[in-house]
Amino acid sequence: MSATTTADQPTAIASVDPTPPPNEQAGATVVTIAAAAQQSAAVPAVITVPFASSNHPDGVRISVLPHGITGNGEMWIPGPEEGIADWVDAVSWLNTPGYAAPFSNHGAVILAGHINWKGVPGALSDLSEYGANDLGKTITVTMTDGRHRSYRIVRGLTVDKAQLAAESNQGPLHTAMFGQTGLYGPADRPTEELRLISCGGQFDPAAGSYNSNIVVIARPIS
Image 1: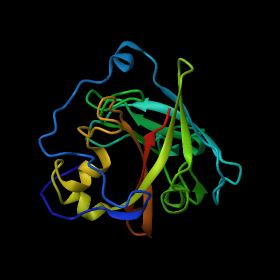
Image 2: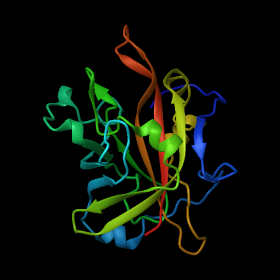
Image 3: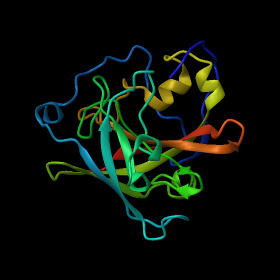
């Protein structure tokens, strides 16, 4: 989440739509989060991926840990470095004012987790597969009050970390990952979308990190 602008765009892994989405419309009116979401104290508790992938042949059930932006302006990721023992089955939800929750009427629910840690696969280790091979499949978020929100996978993106760091927070890469002004679904009943984020691309042993972020986008169907 950093500084100076570039016209670089995220690279599509795949998409079920033939044209790019009208995600963040210039000058779009920012609307308040839907009353149902505002009035409920419920937060995302579990995300269920029911289909098979390389590291999760039986699918995966992932705990969701709400957390705000860290003091250095980054998204908190649950991992062993944070003292989270069950990090392999956990992601964080960006629980910060201005960011959407499930059952909202705009914006994006941001969930992020490790691809792996010292060779151990994380909850989102197969995220790039979801964006390339599993378009049209559904994943479900369960709230702490028992409600369920199912999302259909519509797109996968790869975002270069160096390009992301080189642009402003209003740049196209930041918008693709974190933007909150998009309206989705029917015009008379707009919804939020879900964005799952992890690392990907090439691993740089010297830096100890991957050179890209993988983003999978899904839209509500229930």
